[in-house]
Image 1 (cartoon, rainbow, N blue to C red):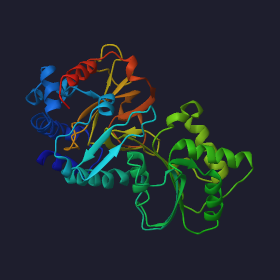
Image 2: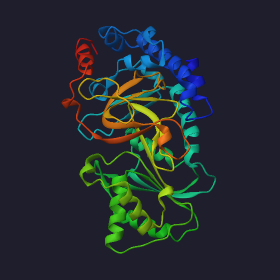
Image 3: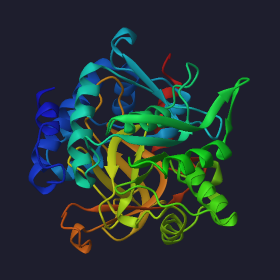
Image 4: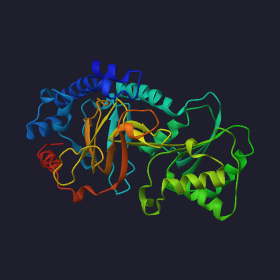
Length: 373
């Protein structure tokens, strides 16, 4: 996939306008590959009367049939033999169903170049060793979730002096150990080396709230950071505004908001979105984002709220080049952010259940029923 290779080798991770033609060629290349190597995907595209050759201009991305993430929770779709998918990742499955996405060597190589390039935005790589506190799952052979792999991977941004996990596996399940994490925070606050938090914002917030209630204040070493990813999941009803989160981090940990960095992504769309200094998710060159009307699925203008449709030619192993999430979002003009990045930025508003959305994606599901998986 030469166009994918060129796209993921491009130096400026946010030069979206300059890479439109290259992105289109990479998507067409990826689409044609899946069309020829995944019978289920071919069946879907044929059923929707679409062929990869229909991708002629960047505006044609809106015509590319998207697959709802729900399909990947019910079906395993692959375009390469199983032995070539050296890594498999699953969604967290908080609703009882999990997506399984495979990655071959070239997919992982593209992903590595993407991470290295996007991470420059917030200076995440450093030779200075850190103590890591992971508000996520301690790796276990039974856990293949993408969020676990991502959280562990983030502890390699710098040399890791230690890794302390909030969720530990015992007796067949994970249990939260916030008391153990609190002891680690107090211990590491006395060190000269920076501390980096990584993981779910919910557990990070619960710890900080517990510290506040107990009137515990620490001053973490300089350049300590909070890295957030994975969303609030089952704790969405307890989600707080970012300003509340930032104020509490300053109050109990002495970490300023510019040292709080948030990530956005999904196992079905493994592109790294890293917020800028103004905490906006600017779209990198490896993806394009369309916002669609909930009722008509028409593409909306920037500034309007709708369903988030994510497109990337990153993965060869599975046909995930265009997926419809159950997220509601708004795409804003990049010029509206003062950080200096001109690519549009995505604001996630909330989530809506796919069962409540009547879309042509349902047509894809019907077609899949006819395929002998």
